[in-house]
Picture 1: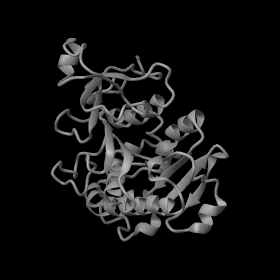
Picture 2: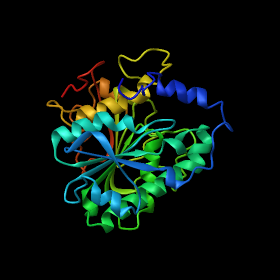
Picture 3: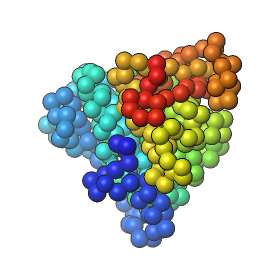
Length: 304
């Protein structure tokens, strides 16, 4: 699993479980200045150029091109920017674009509840300010697409909600964190007011309860993913969404999903005549409601 490991090859989600007991051992006083932005382009596909809010010198010295589409990816709780690298590789293969991985790892470290309540809004505000900064330097707001994994989905949601330059055209949430983000807390979690179109993919949550987008996709029912162990000690179900999304960028088959009200009805064939939509990068902005689909247990995951 590409999203499960960092340089130590220790499962990130397992680290998260261990860190949950360490409240007070991390410096929680970190501020927005700790949020950095890693820029990758076809001119520097492997070595990041670091950008910061309102730093014109760094921007001018970089390979950033305001005329190109810009994809911004935010990692999850106790995660690192490399959680977005599989999508980065696929996007740069597909098109000439700016890919920016948000490094909010300092703020993302610590007790889950503390980070959710206190640090996600800080990281979200910094990310929103960064988008506003790029817009002030000539980038059209229509060129931006923000993507967030787990708690990072709420980071980009906060960014969209706080944007000064207008409304983002699209935000994609990859299995948004549910714990500590109640549905009624629209100011702190990803919701449909944060962008003109919000699409969400769920791989370890429950349908209806966690539907938060204009279009919500539930591969394999959205709870248990084929090929993941039971019990899932390494967050395989949760992290599978990163691989599914990365594959969706260039897959020749596509992740075709059917509008449906439950996984059971999808499996029974009751939804075979319903509206269809592609899950992932190729989703239509006209997609609305809940969608279900099946995937393979290993890469390539798409079944068409």
